[in-house]
Image: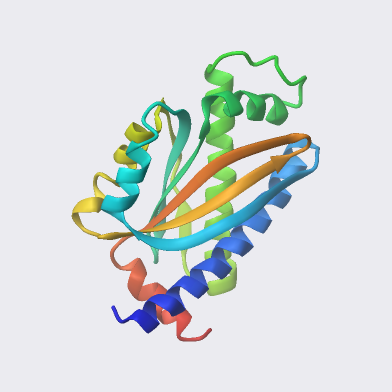
Length: 203
């Protein structure tokens, strides 16, 4: 792919990411009945090997993640994860109860991360469907609680054999008085690149 095509695709995906994050923030605010803001940090293309190596350096960081396949005209693999400690705060917020009641990762925390992954993935697929007329929908999430490096490797293991690049969307969750940092990764699969090139031709 020529460099100019990469730039065009990056710009389109940044727009898609921004729209998706804004919509996710609105939905999340309504769900927890409190002010919530999800701010987009960055969107960029990176080599899978380099990104995996960077994540490996955080091997001691325990996280809770949600894997979701976005299927349709432009298939993507989606991963959302948050530090296990922060997932407990998110659980209490989503259950609308006093912060601190959830003291360990349990079925409630698993369900909260699963639902949050659903919100984010649905927002992304809705933006594709409504704003770009691309058929897309999320499959049910799979939740995993493990070290960050293991979660990430599980996410890229299949696609790494087919693609050299991964699209990374980084975001910061700011909910009420808490500054919760989480990570989102979106990996475009094979034919989605052709769809994105087509979309960027009209932008």
